[in-house]
Image (cartoon, rainbow, N blue to C red; front, side):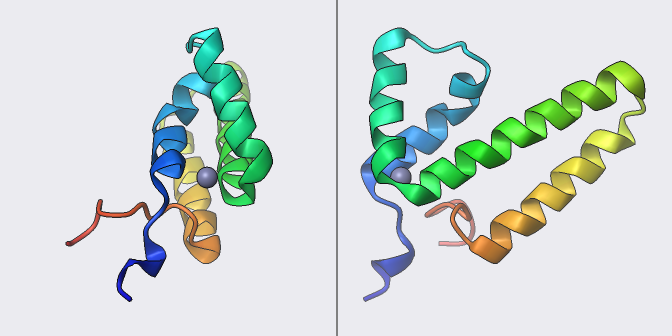
Length: 96
Ligand SMILES: [Zn+2]
C-alpha cells in the first residue's frame, strides 16, 4: 500500500496542463477535458484555484512593483499551502 499518495493518471495529466490552461494557451478540446476532470476532482480544482491566484498576484505585482523577489515570495507562500493540503507534491517528483 505505498501508492495511496499517487495521483491518478488523469490527475497527473490535468496538473501538467494546468499552467497552459490558466494561460489560455490550450486547445479547446483539452480545455473541455480539463474542466470535466476539475468538476469531479476537488483537489485538482483546488490546484487550479491556487495557480490562478498566483498568476493574478504575479500580474498585479509585475504592474505595480516589478521587483523580482516578490515572485519568489509568492511562490514560496503558495508552495507552503500546497504542502499543507498535500495535493500536489506530485507522485514521483521527489525521491523515488
Ligand atoms: Zn484530479
